Length: 144
Image (cartoon, rainbow, N blue to C red; front, side, top):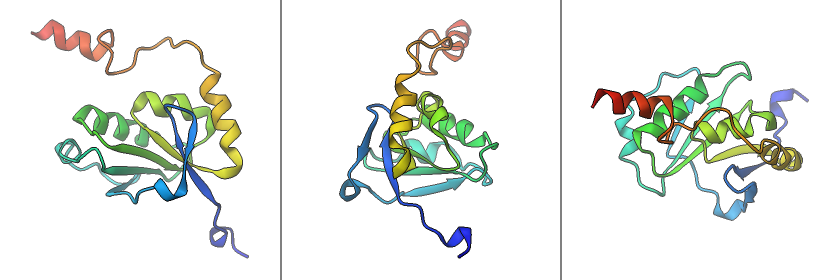
């Protein structure tokens, strides 16, 4: 059997709470973006409702554009759910959350790894983008 023919069962992992979303509560993505795609105008995402779901699929583990896309979409004002899927690993859990992802689509067998990864980092050396202490906020304040 070919590798791409094998379907791995996945669950939607809540990055804020370290819990798994029940399959019955999982919604279909309104927008799907692959890291190889170019990002549409950010104003589209700000206009989405709180019930909207945007999925960013990491085509390759080494492709960091998904993190940039998430940050840009979050800063544009997405009120809904932002899901990371594809080639993401538990070690990236905290960074995914800090870039704006709310959930990750992960293999069921890796739930314990993702929960452990979220609790492994008690302090952060960098500020989140929405913090008043971030570099972005500071540069905006200086311009005013």
